[in-house]
Structures are given as C-alpha cells and as structure tokens.
Image (tube, rainbow, N blue to C red; front, top):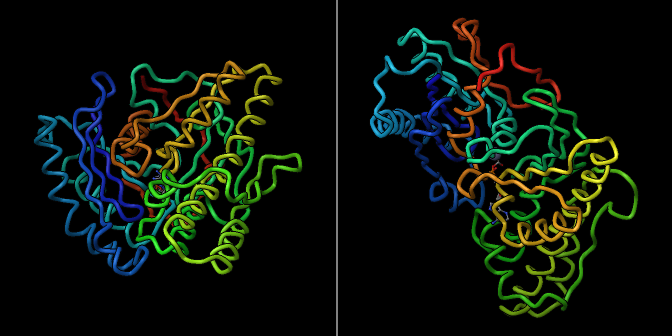
Amino acid sequence: MRVLGIETSCDETGVAVYDSDRGLLAHALYSQVATHAVFGGVVPELASRDHVRKLLPLIREVMTASGSAPGDIDGIACTEGPGLVGALLVGTAVARSLAMAWDVPALGVHHMEGHLLAPMLEHPAPEFPFVALLVSGGHTLLVDVQGVGRYRILGETLDDAAGEAFDKTAKLLGLPYPGGPELARLAESGQPDRFRFPRPMTDRPGLDFSFSGLKTAVLTRVRELPDDPQTRADIARAFEEAVVDTLVIKCRRALEAAAMAGDPPRLVVAGGVGANRRLRERMAEMAATLDAELWYPRPEFCTDNGAMIACAGSVRLTDADKSHAITARARWSLSELKPPALIRG
Ligand code: KG4
Ligand code: ZN
C-alpha cells in the first residue's frame, strides 16, 4: 500500500510517500523556524498561513521524487491532532480534498502515534512489545506499547513537557528560538559539576514527570550569578544533565517493571528531545546495564516529519476511510486509540 503522509500540527510542514512493501520512497520538510524566531515562539496564525503556502508545492515535490502519479497512491494520511487547530485544519483540508479528487481513502493520524511508530521506518525495526518514551515540545509520555493501538500510558508530565522545559530555559539563558537544540549546543562547552539542579519526582515511586520547577531553579541561578558566557554554559550543562538524568531514571523504572511483567526489556525513544546527544549517551549506558534493547528513529525523524504520519497511516488505512471523516483536534489522548481493524505489514 502506497500512502501520502501530511504533517502540519505545529511549525513544520512535512510530506512523505511511504510504501508498505518498499519502505520510505521520498520525504520533504519545510521548517518555519525563521518565521517564528523574531517572536521567540510559534505564532499560530502565521503557522497556518505558512502551511497554506508550502503544503501543495511540497506534495508536488514528494510525488515527483517518489516517482508517484496520483493513480499510484492508495491512501492519504494526515495529522488529525493534537496540535494547533488552525495548522491542523490546513493538512486535514488538503488531505480530504486530494482524497476526494483521487478517489482514495483518507485517514487522520494521532501525532504522538506517528512519533511512537517512527522507529518502524528503520531497518531493522523494533518488535512489539516495547516501552516508549515520547519526549517532544508538547508531550512527555511513558507508554507500554503491546502493538499498534494497544497503548497504556504509564506516566506523563504534570506540567511542562521536556522539550518545553528546554525551550523555556533556553529563553532564560538568552538563546534564540527554538531553544532545545541551542541549549544542547551551549551545554557542550559547560562544566558538568559546577551546578546541580533537582531531578523532579525521582525521590518517590511512579512514572510521572514534572519539569516546570526546573526552569525556576535555573532562573534563581541566573539572577544571582554574573552573566558571563562560561556561567551560562555551565548552567545549560547542569540543566541538561538534570532533565536527562530524570528521563533515564524513569525509563529504567519502566523497563524494570516491564521485565517483571514478563516483557523483554525494550525501549523506544522518540520525539524532538530524542535527538539530544547527551540523552542518547546516558540512555545507552542505562540500557546496557539492564541488557535492554534501545531504539530510536534517525534524528531527522525524531522531530516532526511527514514520514512518520505516512508510516502510521499505512497500518491503519482501510476502505472505510473513503468517508474522509477527519476533524482537526487540538486535544486528543493517545489512550483513546484502538488497534487498527486490519493489520498491514
Ligand atoms: O517532536 P517535536 O519536533 O515537536 C513536537 O511535537 O513538539 O519536538 C520539538 C521539541 C522542541 O521543544 C525542541 O526544543 C526539542 O524538541 N528538541 C531538543 C533537541 N532537538 C529538538 N531538545 C533538546 N535537545 C535537542 N537536541
Ligand atoms: Zn511532534
């Protein structure tokens, strides 16, 4: 089955063509970073308008690059939510219109299921079951994944998402938007032991997270210390270490619980923060001590992209989706998803 995938939930326009027999045929991404950078964050109305400008040219580009004519496409998948509702509406409207014109089914995909299944784009791909750590700008979730649509949320953030904490702390340190990768870069020149920030909620049982207090701890430090480049780098390093350490501690707990339940210790890390180099190093050390498998999408598919949406669509699309009934959902819990009617390879 050949699927055109469309992602427009936030500030990246992503398009891909995925074939369930041949894998990913082509993908393209347009990042709106330059548009939003002057405002220090995503401006929803500007995001929607930019998706309107960029989506059709990207679809043309990816159709050509994948050697696909409209008649070769068996279905269209677009992000239905969660995300910015105006941005989502652009993708869902284009997906439904093209599907009507081409007489193929169209399906709305859950953005976080896209992230969760993104490692399936790689060869080899992880087998089920696994524990997934989803760390993006809007979500921080630990999920027990028994199969497609068989998700049990083990833990989630009570306030800021991990990526959001990176972005807000980067802003405090005077770094440009988007802050996460900038902060990570600054942290590379920071000393590891000069400051130590708390590891929130690791001193009690459970798998929930809370990151909003960390930025307050950083703010206090920033205010009481002289503003020199080395101090800023040292604070960035200590902040990154605190977030990474917290994520690693909770993942270790989730893997130990999975092993107790008789599942193989297998961890998938996905979402934008999964591109963080320090996180990858520390997760690898932890996984090695548990003899656990550790899987990631390639870094470009950790952040938002169309390939993960096309891939998720390929396992969920059926002829019933010819109704083209897709809404745009600002909020949508992953735990509402059900297994697909028909599992496709
Ligand atoms: O998955 P994603 O592209 O979009 C959402 O669905 O939110 O994740 C974006 C988030 C942003 O908060 C960004 O700052 C963060 O991922 N991020 C990083 C890194 N690359 C992206 N955070 C830390 N280190 C990175 N290298
Ligand atoms: Zn995302």
